[in-house]
Length: 238
Image 1: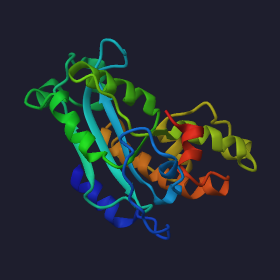
Image 2: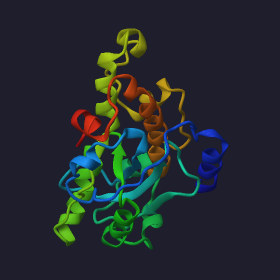
Image 3: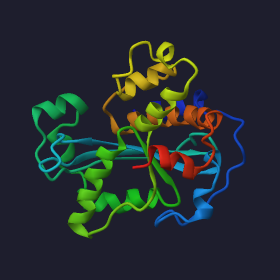
C-alpha cells in the first residue's frame, strides 16, 4: 500500500506554481506575530490522521497514525509517517471492520509512548492539519499527558471548519454543495474536488486525501481574503 501511495504522489498530485518556500521555526510554542504573519503558501504543513479502537474519549486509544507533508504547495515524494500501534485498549470487532487492523497485526508493534516522540519529531517546524482534527488531537494529547504531561504546541487547522467557512462565502454555495451541507465526511469533501482514496479509514491514505484537499484550499483561501497563517487559524484553528 505504501508503494501505491508513493506512486500516486509521483504521478501527479504535486501542484506547481506556488510561491517559493520559506521554512520557519518556533511553532513548537505559541506562534510569534512574525510567524503567524507568514503567507499560507509559504508554510510547511504536516497533514495527519489517526485510527482508533473506538470513539469513546475515556475508554479508547490510538491504533495507527499516518501523516504526509505539504511543503511549497506540494506533497513531497517519500516524506510520510505511518505506524501501527500496540493500543492500550482492546480492539473490538466493530473497530476492526472500520480500519481493518487486527489484534495479530498490533501484537508486535510499539506502544504509543514509543511512537509519539517520533511523530512529534516529524512534525517539527510545521503546522498540523487534519479533518475533524479535534478528535485526533484529543487522543494524542491524552497519551502525551499519560506519560509526560505534555501537549501539542503546534497550531492545528481543521479542514472541516475551513470548508464550512468557505462554503458561506462562495458565489453560489447552494449550487456548489447540492444539498450536501450536512455531509461532513472526508470522502464527501474530497469528492467535490475530484479526489478519491482507495483505502478509507487507513490513517496514511486518509492523511494523503486530506493533504490533497488542503492543496486546493491553499489556492482557494487567498481568493476569499485568507492569505496568512493567522487568518486561517482564526477561522479553522483547533
